[in-house]
Image (cartoon, rainbow, N blue to C red; front, side, top):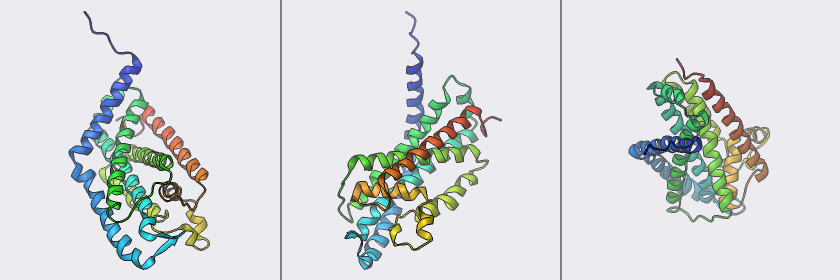
Length: 264
């Protein structure tokens, strides 16, 4: 009896699952490079900024201790860097190894290829977020005020920076190009995104300039979910995240469909 070919939706799900599973296996296989560094780095942040500096700063906003205040920002920092770094290195490796051309020539739609890589990067962001959250519990107590806001913020942030990392990988010509954006764009935006301070403490014009930083909205939405406080309205924060996710998703899909920077 001849085998029954899977329908198109079923075939697409199989392809999506295959790409995502390969990304997950890659993350777990080299866990000492993908998961361990964030755990060590964030532990140092908690020890230096949380314990040593925080003991001198005291309460920073609404009676919340400094070490509690920086927990959401540090988790978001880990999510941003890992989601971005995972897909930028993985997809560029596929492009550098030339096997991305085989995927483009296959019957797989572009959205399946993109979704598979994005799912893998988002999962790494979630895994690192869980690790950093567990580490934070060794230094302070976490009160989850709004669980759904917290979860949705992590997912949207991971998706936004996964897509941004994909765009970086598409235009990168060599491995050095992947490190430029995290070093000269992501790092400054993250440190100036309210991770270690309240934007309301800034004077003019720095406070107004800070509102142009999208990471500020992500950090504060997550801080609202964990601590119940935020420097920006929650609705605006989610509008910014949804907007960036839609724009970057459309750009990524356009680049993949046209084969820009991918086909020789």
